[in-house]
Length: 48
Image (cartoon, rainbow, N blue to C red):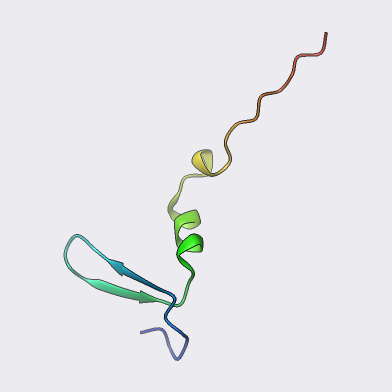
């Protein structure tokens, strides 16, 4: 389970397994989102 920690998120898988997590949903999202999607590219201005 969450080893005595407060459950902060519940994940239900396609196979109907249930995961209880002590990690915030935002943290889980960041960990599974590829780095290229987390940091949108910035437009660099060309020096004139």
